[in-house]
Structure formats: structure tokens, C-alpha cells
Length: 120
Image (cartoon, rainbow, N blue to C red; front, side):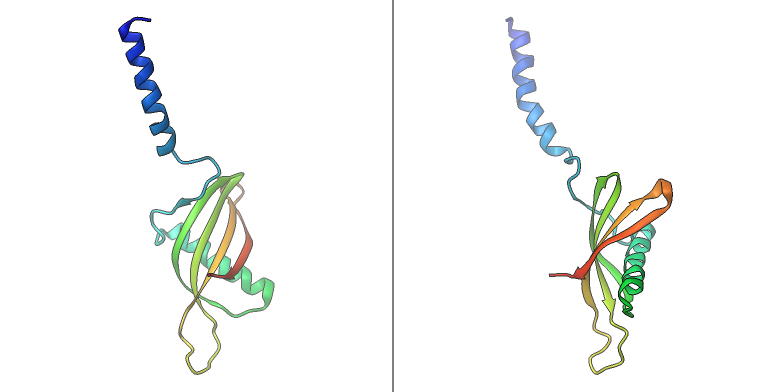
């Protein structure tokens, strides 16, 4: 091997792992850049509404606190949503955080709530 070929080989061996570690893993969770994005808020509201339908609860959506997305056959969203329980009692008004996972298939205009539980 000549010096130029050796240099290119060494450079590629150094740069390839750096490139691989910088790119997101397929199927891995990635933080959302803007939890106030109208689409993210819509998904947060959907998660609370759907949970209420399924469990006969009366939670009220407040805000999306944080979130991540995951590319699957569509998109999974794992959101921490703040909700009020809607019960008129002493101390009411304090919000509680829940973790909601919503699977969206945008091309079908379809969203499914796959998990909704108190956030740890």
C-alpha cells in the first residue's frame, strides 16, 4: 500500500465510529426538540382524552412537560403530560405527571394510546 492509501484507510477507521455514534439509532428514542409544537400538544391532548374514554376518568390536560419520539412502523411518542384530576377537593389544582405512549401512523390519520401511567 502506498502512503496515500494508508492515510485514507486510517482516516476512515477514525471517522467511521465518530459518524456512527453521532447518528441516531434506528428504533431508538430521541428527545423532542419542542414540546410546545402544536402537533406534540395535539398528541398530548389525545392521550388524556383517550385515557378518559377507556377508564371513565375525568383528567384535564394541562401541558406536555417533556417527550421523546421513536421511529417504528409510524412514530411512537413517549410524553410526560401534566394533568389535573378534575375533582373539586382541598388541594385540587395541583397537577400530576403521567407518562403516555402514543403510536401514530400519520398517513392513516391514526393514533393509538398504548400506555398511560403515573410518571415516576
